[in-house]
Image (cartoon, rainbow, N blue to C red; front, side, top):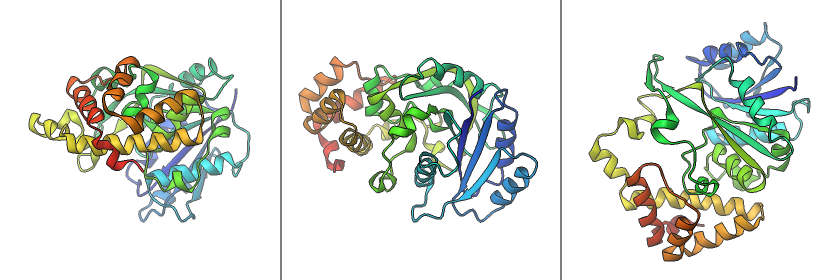
Length: 316
């Protein structure tokens, strides 16, 4: 049974960290090592982890002593530590974990089984999930059926950071060996999960498991309050405002250019070229490659913004 490194980035997660680690300890796949990197918590996060470590040697904790701090930065620097062998090299897979979710007991077992079918190349798998609130109440039963987690084509991943959620991700050693996470990436402000998924799409393979394998916790006072399932029709239409969508798309496409510049493939070169062109040629590219969103209004917004070229304001 191959060892899997579970990497978790924490910051002031004392309220839920114990429950999340207990859900990891309850996994049917038992050959794992949990590596937690704390980003300067001021609550009891570190103390809780250290106490749990006393009775489970598979739990490890380190501190982010780098100059880069923040949710994405913490993950990027931790991934680099794993790649560089700071925690040893006795692993075949890496799983990402948030600090406040609850994993279903067969999460690792099912994801390892899926990724083994693509183990001859850099591979990443991700899964379906349901959403719970602060009190463990289910507020979305099936993310894939309600918001769509499977892109219409692999290239659709490059036009919306809306499919692969990091807390559901498992990837193999072949992928981490190919990762180029330099200062430009760490300080980019771009989501680490989207970065991994896009690279896997360009140079390897990515697969989706439609089974619900985690309870993804979202809070009423954070970004979840702006998610579509909580929005009024008026608020939803505001989010589809071309000016707002232009920035969102522009930032996403700027990440694409960063990636395609690092990983030279024919698909990546074509993508980078069309991002810089946009306009009617951009629309033809979207249609030819079946790039579309599940929600009709979001799809229309994507086409309008890409055709207009306004997104280029956020392209560096």
